[in-house]
Image 1 (spheres, rainbow, N blue to C red):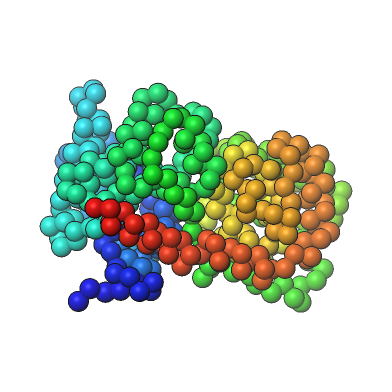
Image 2 (image 1 turned 180 degrees about the vertical axis):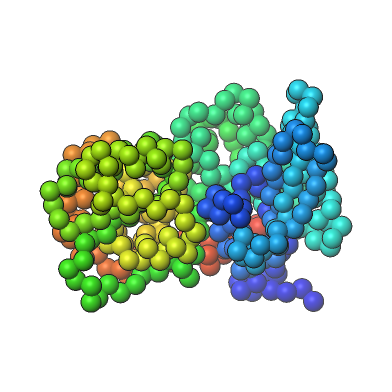
Length: 392
């Protein structure tokens, strides 16, 4: 008997193909892809195929294994494809496509024949459309990569993106600005914006009653890179050094983490700018629920998942005015200041320290849940899958 989704429509079999996914060693890497898979799983039957290029010294050309760690899989059957970096120059793309094709056939032999292939990022889209076109399976490609917005895509990669997007049945950028950035390369496709998803079962408001007198807690979550505005955060905090009653909690990692920690010490704020490093989603959510607002002065985002997670936790956001934030961070959800204007950023932080309690946590959470929860995004994904399936 064919099962039905919560929307009342037939559950489809959907295979995710991606080159970026969380692992046991790197649980925070590209977690937004797994959130999409969790969202899709509400209405459809989902499997994930994650490909990894192994060292050229690997003994086998390719091998596939099922993820056994329940913390990584989170209820989704996940396969990891390891394929050897080819020794012959100029054969990398062909080897990748062949190995993904072999892995697909093995998954199909196990009894899972997808109705839809959903690739994440155009490189995975190349393998997806190669399989889909050959077997008559519709293909959707979600794009997350900020390289399009930065105008940094090399000419050789533009050709790959144009091919993957042009042959896909649907291209699903995670925001309107990202869609515009892709189109600016002259790429034509059947576009439909479907945002990243937020797990509102762990990102939700928590009462802060009974803890008056504690320092106001500010939070940042993201990669510790210059383009995320980490240096700007520290410069702003220096201006608040003489003001008591605040702490800055910074979550994330990267090669510059030690440099930023040393910078904070040299600036005299090392005891108030607390670096937590990379942490699991549950720990980030736990701390975010205890914070008063988020400071996220990124210079560029395709979506900004952590800012929506903050809203889901009922806390407002201070950020630079970039296209990706203009929809989500309105005047009743935070403060946007001109890009790169550190004086305005500092003033906004001071204002938020004094008025963060004026924002309504339940309203912030409701906005995030209505638009970006697993259920909301899962419904949009199911509708997109049904639409492209009908065309076939």
